[in-house]
Image 1 (cartoon, one colour):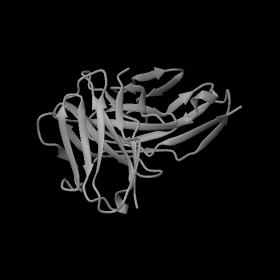
Image 2 (cartoon, chains in turn blue, cyan):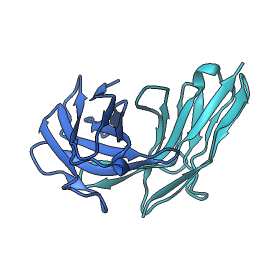
Image 3 (tube, one colour):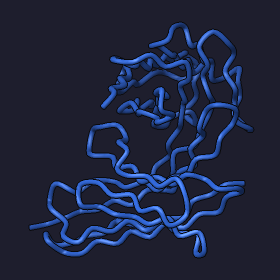
Image 4 (cartoon, chains in turn blue, brown):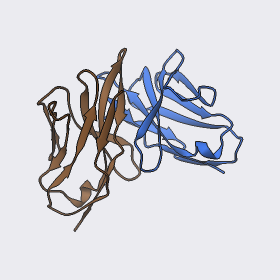
Length: 114
Length: 114
């Protein structure tokens, strides 16, 4: 099946710094990618839909100025957590939409903000 | 809005035992239903899906039937193996434009022992 990678897999940063997470579709092109957030023992919550060449669509309650999404190419979407704070600590997962409308998921990035 | 409820885990079974993980949903319209599996350190993988009522999805010995009358999509396997140990997520899709948005349950951790 199709492969999606995320980088980094883990990141620890100080409060107030910005963190960038990359999501790449390795063997297919994806005009649409999704970013999810997962809290311990909870389900994946969709944060935003990333569309290549246009602005991302954010879910209700997600701060677009805090979680900056750039879908720079058909194989790359980035999520930047701006001025991260401890409450932003979480597991962030991306997925890429393949031609048959199936989502392929990355392995996730664990963010810890001290 | 859409929601998915699945049984809390962890579920601990001996090898060759019968597995059932319950999943019920609330949705408008006629969603597609999915089971995803997440092995340790890996991204979510699609295990099986069903796109309309009474459809049965199956893969790797796992089965689930789309029951519209009970709004359920329970996952079953007749004989589990140690290698089935993972977290299982039930999900449904609702379309926005041309992209499928997924709503996930909280996940159920399965631990299979010898």
